[in-house]
Amino acid sequence: MSQKETRICQNCKTEFEVESEDIEFYKKLNIPGPTFCHLCRRERLISWRNERSLYHRTCPATGKKIISIFRPDSPIVAYDRDYWWSDGWDPLDYGRDYDFSKPFFTQFRELFERVPMPAVFNAFCVNSNYCNHIGKSKDCYLVFASWENENLSYSAQCGSCRDSVDLLTANNCELCYEIIKGMKLYNVLFAENSENCSDSAFLFDCKGCQHCFGCTNLRNKSYYFFNQPHSKEEYEEKIKEFDLGKLEDVGRARKLFEEEKSRSIRRPAFFMNTTNSTGDYLGQCESCTYCFGLREGAKDCKYCINGGYGLYDTYDSFGCGAGAELVYESIDTGFNGSRLLFNVAVYGSSSAEYSYNCHGSTNLFGCVGLKGKEYCILNQQYTKEEYEELIPKIKAHMDEMPYEDKKGRIYKYGEFFPFDMCPYAYNDTKAHEHFPLSENEAKSEGFIWRGEEKRDYKITKRGDELPNNIQDAKDDITKEIIACAHEGKCDHGCTTAFRITPQELLLYKKMHLSLPRMCPTCRYRERAARRNPLKLWKRHCMCEGVESRNGIYRNTAVHDHGEESCPREFETNYDPEKEDIVYCEDCYNAEVV
Image 1: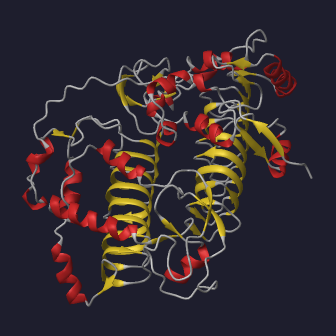
Image 2: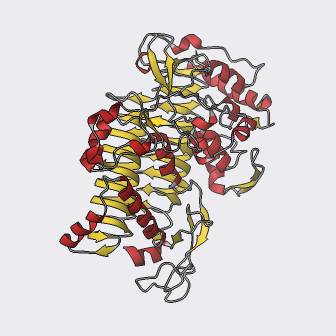
Image 3: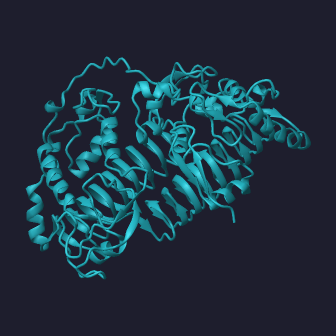
């Protein structure tokens, strides 16, 4: 068995451990292993994903006006999505011989900036043009990283949801608003970490609840109001205290709910039918380490985020899965296939390395935009024998003539694409969301930065001029250009103004919910800020026997450690610098389940 190693990260200069099982994984793929720590690898990886920022461009092939994730001033060529998938052009026309006088990454950049890209990643969708990284969806607007949704707006990381607005990480939800990590919810407003609930509002960590308002840590309850039980008749009188169609009542309810949350305990992580794993929001996973947002059959994975569905034996991935195995340092890659290394958006393929947006292909190295091809290097076609002879030479050349960026970071074979090759502005990417940098910091790392856009919206309504009660909102409100309450003064990328769409207005009226006063971008960033980070800390259980360590929560059950402090330790993504009351799984279950 290999022994673990201690290395120094090229980027942050801190020590990091390469465990024995990591070394065995790298040997299996015949790669040298990382020179960046896992957090720096993650930042580098997700800087290649612009999920939410959309721009107007013109397709150079068709002349059609398009919505694109690539900025108008970007060197990337963006085609209309449907034309890109047509037979109207051939990506092999851009192929080139490998040049042993240049570093590989320099050659890849030259190819990458010539081969056309689809304007957005959007498949099998109807009337869902202003969306990205979605599939099998209908009538969706500003929805991102989602699958099989209908009549959904301003949402991300959703699956099988419909008739809802402002969801973040939700599955099988209907008639819902402002949900963070929700599953199987119906007619639920303002909920976090809850599942199998209906006809409720302001929930945190509730399961199997109906007709509950302002509640936390409940299981299979009905007619609870701020965690107090009531008869059906009493409950119906109580909720009349809050008319959620009125802005001030929403604010008042939210304030009381946050106070209720602050007195509630947290479990270390949200796991469902998951074994031998660490991370958060894992469902039906086995032996997954330091992973977040994996579901349905992920196994033997490490440092993976947002994926699963049969993902196996994979490290350092984002948005990967659907039957793929042996994936490493890749993003948005999968749909079966094996040995997928250092890729972005490679689907239904096998034995592909350092490739971008390739589909249904096998044995690729450094390719862009290929469909149904095999044995290609830099989009140049080779025979099987030529390919197998050339690949070892290229890998050796990557070690002998590595790419070096302006900060002196060295990129040999086995490293993901360099920081300074990313096609997106840093503040348009998932990296900025999880690893926020200032403009100067981002530029010093070699990233592009999107400056403030000049906006000249002709505001027709301020937030304080909107109807106070949803029942007073007329249909012509959809014609108004509404000023965002933040007025562009926040650090959320505020758009300064927004509209209420007709389908959105219908849902607000149906749910009897007050109109929003912030633009969708600011609303998303405020939801995202309420999530825990994609990072783990080792902590002690805060149960002190009869109450929490801070004395705020009083236990309701006798625990196995009696009145003594709980000795258990665990890993969690609850930051120890914050005031959340985090119990170990055993103490939590004694109180809640």
